[in-house]
Length: 275
Image (cartoon, rainbow, N blue to C red; front, side, top):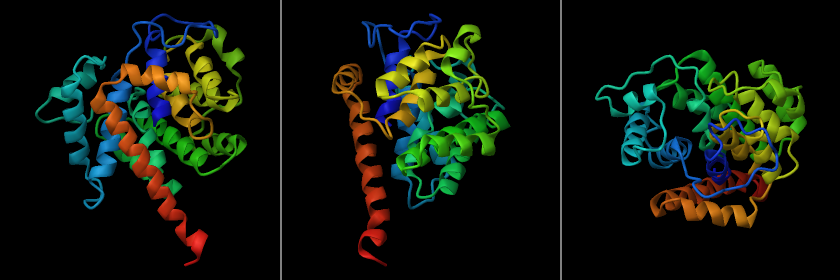
């Protein structure tokens, strides 16, 4: 999840600049956390807090609205902003990548791939209930789950292509020249996953995502969330991001990282010590 936040912050300065260069300045002055970070942490909070209640959707809505209202200037889209402030929020059939940008905690938390797919669907459909919005969230959650559980990039590529019908055979260099800003799941999630598949380390993955010249903060958030499952986040990037995050959001992110890591350790106990 820290990879998602770092990607968001790195991409924030280039969200509307159509950045096509790979060697851009990382975390320049003015870099900030955006709605990607706020909603990612809202989902993480919901996962941690409502285990005994089997993660009711109404609590997710309540948590997302609470976080969104506490950070009202994070850059929400107009439809989602209306949803945040509604007294009776309803899904609005969105295929936007807002469902995919916030879902990475699900992949870290879920015990099985099926659990990840189910939880991802539930986190998406409270607002982004269009099939493409749900698919985007599930594809990201599945990629995170598979990466954190030791699946190879080839295995991740094959599963995502077969399960979600995304074309992951393209290269970043093939995509970049004609690629334009696209906030849809179907036009940004496959490209973000390709950046992870092609990247050689965390920084490389995020640079590739930003260099496509699209919805840079969200694409770097998605790509970074998967990359951090197998690559360490460089210390200097971590320090820069800590400087940007408010203490409350930093504390929430660290709490979830510890929580999800401990949960995965408990899941491994039967294999370590026997049933």
